[in-house]
Amino acid sequence: MTSTSPRYSVPQPAIALPSTPRKRARRRVMAFVAATALTGVAALVLAMWLGGNLTQSNILGLAIGGTGSVTGWGLPATKLVMDLSSVGVIGMLLACLLLPGREPSDTTRRCLRTASVLALAWGISNAALLVFSWSDVVARPVTDLPYSQLFTDTARTFPDAAGFITSTALALVIAGGLAVTETRRGVWLLLPLSIYNLVPMALQGHASHGTLLKYSIGLHVIAMSLWVGGLAALLMHVRSEPAQLAVTVPRFSIIALACYSAVAATGIIAAWQLLGSVSAIWGSQYGVVLMLKAAALVALGTFGWWHRRHTVHHLRADESGARARRAFVRLAAAEVAIMVAAVAIAVALSRSASPDTILLHTNRKTSAAAAVQPAVQPAVRR
Image (cartoon, rainbow, N blue to C red; front, side, top):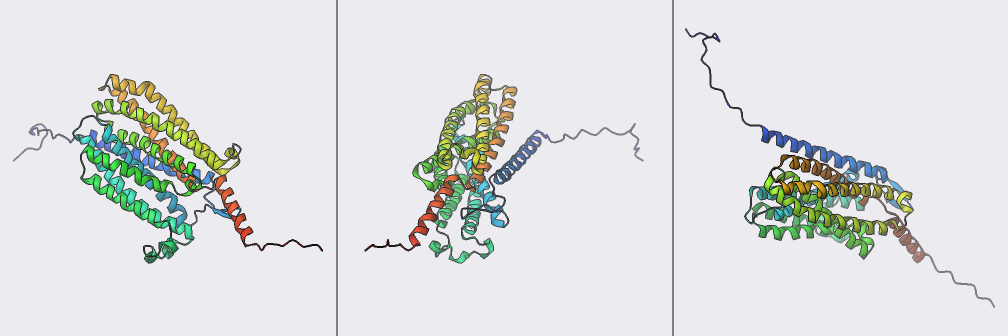
């Protein structure tokens, strides 16, 4: 009979539990992604509330805002997803080019896999944005749209459909290209294609008001995508590689400074074109939301100054220093959260009527009324 007493029990070999640091790191990343997403949603709702978009209003015959339908919430939500996914694709590709070495590393492959998933989300959200934009333009629910006529008679159904369809198709092509490429040559090909696909969707709305405004917004969006997406890529895939981080961060810092300068300069030009006067900054709802975005830009400039003054120097001096890497990760995480909030505020701005939009609508309405009014012949005295 076998004794079960602990005194006579045969010691069993200890079973090694699987290491959990990787799982903990994955959980932290997922928690950060969820918190950042909530920050973006909160910033979007706040900016829409400040811009007067939560309830529909009528200013000089121009219908503005309204979230009482699926389209009212679906349009800004899908626009936010599309913007963030496209920014992520461009940032991942930029990070691939900044990484040291000519041969593709594991970090490069991770960036490309993430970019492929984001490009797929870009295409899907772009297709959804087509439906919601169409519903918004014709003022009909998404369930009542004549989908069978979308590809046969776009001039009558939705004239802008061609741009959305082309952008969706290109995003899916980019996703397929990212899924198969592993070389820098492929990255050099897909990065300009991604930037090219980004610009047309950004030039809708306010950008149609003038040539200077169009080029300003186009450059603004490109610089923002390289800056925001690049930092997010470093934080997501390069933070755990000390040697690569020590080389990549100084390279990215130079690009980030140029992008920040371009974002600030083009933002000022676009704001002046859309506001028309200094008093409109605090005298209109659009100006209030714009100041919120300007505050985010100032905060990001402060973070960038601290990076260049302290973090970049320490990473370059001691590439194996855990303290410098932790400082970079914390500061970059705060930056990315603010950047996502700034993108969400920009989405709300695209849904808000600027003073220039209202003035343009009023002038068109006055011109149309004068054109249909019968001319009055002056009386001839005898």
